[in-house]
Image (cartoon, rainbow, N blue to C red; front, side, top):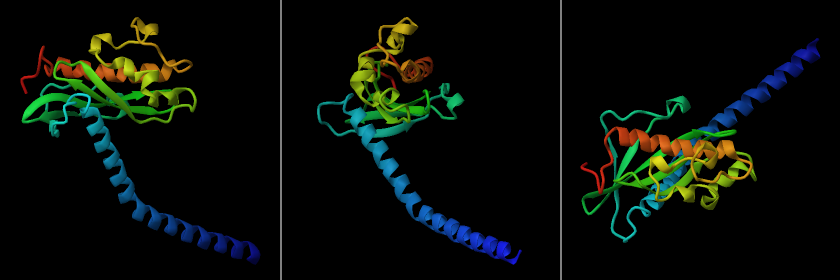
Length: 201
């Protein structure tokens, strides 16, 4: 019996030391990880903004408070946040992150569009889809490049009555990304954010 107690005590001590060590490492690395994520997001914003403003002029960003903006991503426990892209004091377009539930993850897509609501560029920020299948969504040529030049009306897979090809063997992933981008654009349009030839913001 004493051997069992002794073994249990040793295991408890090892577990406490391991938990403490993990807590220390996590406390040390968490801020670095958060900083890296923020830097990656800023880089994605700059890359996306370059599809709106390609003349090399200086770009600035500003989060926008939009009255009446619906949130199409509540089922994914996310919020639609819109960022204005400015150049020389003029609003040139918008950025937002679209959230869509894929086969095995909630896919995050950075979307850039002009003030007329036409998509100019996209980039996958996060996905954990099946390697070799849904994970191919990170290659723009497999899906998201087909979004460029389209408004919300033109964003639908062929299987859903549109003319965008799904990634072979990955309809769920393709639909998740396509629908998430379309729903974001629709919410922005319904809030009066887009105008023909430009925005009044």
